[in-house]
Amino acid sequence: MLEDMEDVCNRIVAFLKEACDRYGVHHAVVGVSGGVDSAVVLKLLVKALGKDGVLAVLLPESTTPRRAMRDARRIIRESGVKYVKHSISPMLMVFGAYFKLEAMATISSKFNKYLRKKFEADIVKEDVYLHSLKYEKNIWVARETSFYRMKHRLRMVSLYYYAERNNAIVVGTANRSEFLTGFFVKYGDGAADVMPIIDLYKTEVYKLARYLGVPESIIDRSPSPDLIRGVTDEYAMGVSYFILDKILEALVDEKKSIQDAADSLRIPISLVKKVDTMMKLSEHMRVPFLSPGLR
Image (cartoon, rainbow, N blue to C red; front, side, top):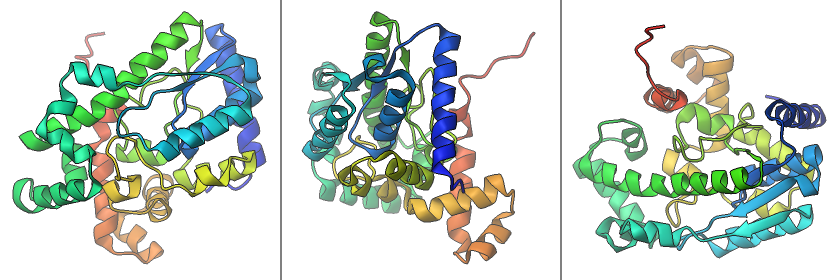
């Protein structure tokens, strides 16, 4: 794990400056959700480009927690950057999403928990998150994921709209933990011109957040993909980031076997196998597309 956050900060700031020079732009657009990842990226962008070089975009919808928007506005206010706010709910309504039975899962966390258990026990007969990573899914899971993922894809459309009209680049907020396990939306929050924290595990993002002075209200809030009300990252994946990052570091960085990782970390091998399966099932999400390779 990276420990010297001053060095990490300086290297990322230098990277952002170099990236803007490469693109020939002096402005950046970033979606701010009120979560720790976007707060860290916003802070880094201000260091790299100054407050006048950054536009923050808030894109809530009907299930977005009010606390998240309060935290988003707070970090924006403290950073001194300009921002725009638009709800994506009208766009979702055009698709009829809010009027479908499956959208009820976004209204109540208890109802969502019931559906999750129902899916696992009677329908998909396996972990719902792992099942959702497959291309061919149970029809009910496919309908749910298409609805949830559309939220992030509509947000990315909006970010590129604001970036292009302001001659700016889109800066993403995905981290290494999400990227390796598929806990992102392809062509949604997984799309951007640059990804400044993509090399940092989530636990490292927290360290960087404290170094940068991100408010504790943001750091302490349970991370959520802001797709389903009441559903956090760790609930959906079924493992805490503290344990997940240790497993990923053992399997990916240290190239240990599943058995060796489980033994060295003193955790159940079943959990290590689950994380390994996450990486394998989400492999297709980490490439833009497949091609025949004729040239």
